[in-house]
Amino acid sequence: MTTYDFDEIVPRKNTNCIKYDFARERGMPEGLLPLWVADMDFRTPDGVVERLVEVARHGIFGYSESKDDYYRAVADWFSTRFGYAPERAWIKKTPGVVCALAAAVRALTEPGDSVVIQTPVYYPFAGVVRQNRRNLVDNTLVYRDGRYLMDFDDLEKKIVDHKAKLMLLCSPHNPVGRVWTRGELARLGEICLKHRCLIVSDEIHCDFALGGRTHHVLPTVDPALNEIAVILTAPSKTFNLAGLQASNAFIANPELRKLIKDEIDATGYSQLNTMGLAACQAAYERGGEWLAQLLAYLEGNAEFSRRFFRERLPRVRLVEPEGTYLLWLDFADYRLPQEELNRRVVSEAGLWLDEGVMFGAAGAGFQRVNMACPRSVLAEAWERLAGAFG
Ligand SMILES: Cc1ncc(COP(=O)(O)O)c(C=O)c1O
Image 1 (tube, protein in one colour):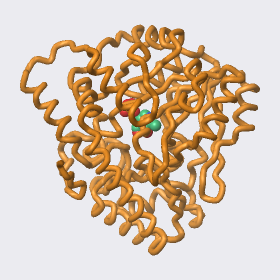
Image 2 (tube, rainbow, N blue to C red; image 1 turned 90 degrees about the horizontal axis):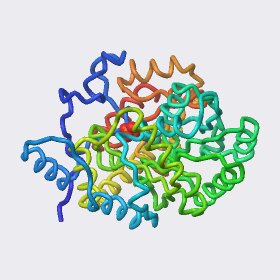
Image 3 (cartoon, protein in one colour; image 1 turned 90 degrees about the vertical axis):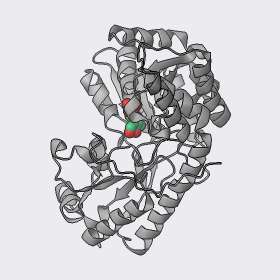
Image 4 (cartoon, helix red, strand yellow; image 1 turned 30 degrees about the vertical axis):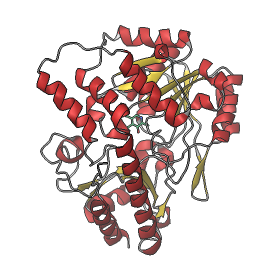
């Protein structure tokens, strides 16, 4: 068995990665320690690299499609790990999850229709609603005693008042790090079924349930949800493949499936890229052991961070990371305007993080940190933060 060394620093500068190489273009000073965008500083599993090398060596990159073995690899991953077995016909490949979110918004609603999101949330959720000229309705998460909860009464009221046809669910939730419980998802599902509000469930972080928690693929809490839900998944977060743009939507309802397929066809997009397809299949077939070791490492990073904030920076509240590899830090105790908070993070700590307001007004006073890096890098980041906020 290969033992992976997640402590290894893999240099990423001058590889055209947006995390390290585009500070100036993105309006940031050069030389910051970047812990912002959600990709990892770890190499993808050997089995995936080997498969990609094999494809590259063949040297022909013509149009590619997938056969049964691709669909089997995807379905096996989800049935083995989550007890959810998508049939081959349900799987619609998409060139990225945000692309699928946007296509679903266009396919399942009309301009002017209301779409519900739960802020603070991954900012493209608001983006795909607004950019497609739908009406954004916010069922803001409730932040109580350092934990985020859904406000179900508000959700039902907003769906009814705005005649919302669609909600975009983030599960597990980026940036607040919740892994929604079976009970929470069942309650949400019940409300949406009652009012026939469709759900697009973005489950790209499904493989990162921490602390012994379980991620529930939405329809596993109630099979009736297969009628109204579109599940978006990808190997990209799990295996660090975002640049290869391969993702899989599971759409059990044939009507919804046709609407989304037609919408994607209308953009002129057909097959995914050859390397993305190869990597996706190889990752699901060969990546299990690597992922087990990665998760153990990330648990270690989370624990290291908990201890650091408890002992060295108690005024910064680390919202308990239940899932994802993103940490959500609450600086409310400092009572700083967002601009000043950002200035301290950037100019005094020398860190490139994601400011909380990117995820909606409810994120004011927070910063999001990507902990999927070697522990020595994380330690350096926390020391810098302590220097600026201690
Ligand atoms: C919740 C969520 N959805 C989607 C994405 C991006 O997906 P893709 O790169 O496949 O568009 C991210 C990346 O951070 C994410 O956190």
